[in-house]
Length: 272
Image (tube, rainbow, N blue to C red; front, side, top):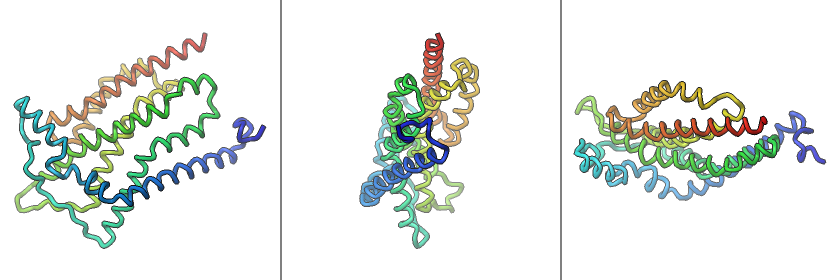
C-alpha cells in the first residue's frame, strides 16, 4: 500500500506536499474562473458591480413597494443616487479589473476549493464521520452562495443608498474612487458569504466538543446583542435596515443550536 493511499503512514512533509497540490489545484480553478470573469468585463462591471448604483435595481424597487404598502418612509423610492465613481490613478481601472476578476473567480470556484479541502482532510476521517459529513460540499456551497446573494441584494444596496446619499454639507460632493466602491461591494458580498457558513462551522466545532447546544443557548442574549451591533455597523442607522440584516443571522444562529443538539445526540448513540 502506498503512502498516499494510507495517510497514517505519511510523514509530516508528505502531508505538506499533499496539501501543496490541493492548494495548487484550487488556485488554478480560481484563476481559470477569474480569467473567464476578466473576459466578461461588461457583465461583471456594468451588469453586476454597478447594478446597485442604478435606481432601477430590484432591491430599491422592492423596498419602495414594501414601504408604500406598510406606510413607511419612502427613502428607497429613488430618483437618483447623487454620486459619481471615478478613477484617479493611471493603473486604477486595470488594477480594479484584475482584482475584481480574481474575487469573482473565487466566488464561482468556491465549491471546487471546498472539494479540494475535503479531499485533503477526508482520508483522516473514520467511515462513520465521512457518512455524517456527506452533505458537507453541497450545504457549504449552498450557504455560501445564499450569503453572497444576501450581501449583494441586501447589504450592498442598503450601504450604497445611505453612504452615496449622505452629505455633511451641500458644499461637499460625493465623488468616490473606483477602488473604494469596489471594496464596499466586495466586502459586503464575501463577508456575508462567510457569515452564512456559521452552521457548518458549528457542526464541526460540536463534533470535536468545543461548542454545545446548551452553551449556544446560554450565550444567546449576548450573541443577539453582537448581531445588532454588527447590523448597526454595516447598515444605515435606521431600525428597518438593521432588522432586515439581523433576521437571517439570528435564524442561522438558531439553526446552529439545532445542529449542535443533533450532533450531541449522535455522539451519545455512538458512545453506547
